[in-house]
Image (spheres, protein in one colour):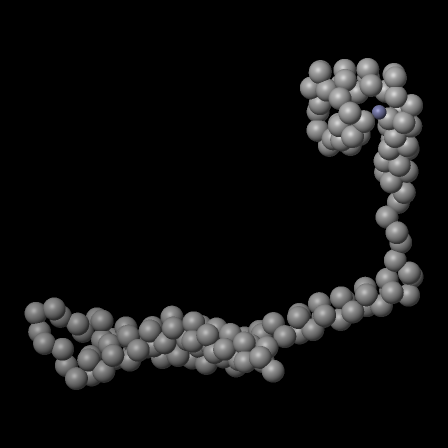
Length: 155
Ligand SMILES: [Zn+2]
């Protein structure tokens, strides 16, 4: 094996397991070749010093300002997450109460063999409309907000 091959093997041995023959050829070659022996020991030293060197520290000022920036960004995110205003819960409660008050007498009067009266029809329509709105409003609000956000990102 030439010196170049041996150097390649020495470098390879840092990240993969060499075969028995490869290890043997390194050993045999370095016993006769001073240059490759030097290369092997220098390479070992270099690797050790790289391993022992700690990661470079960030200057204190930069570290502090980066942390501060991250904290501010997190706070902004927290503030911008929308909460449902209390009056919406109030309106919802009133709507549910009205629905129940209207629904109970109609249900007790309801007979399947008779056609629906106009009042029953109205109450049922009202209930179905409310239910549909209740399910779809959150989705509509979400879509609307997503659109607004993407529009803001464009500017
Ligand atoms: Zn050599």
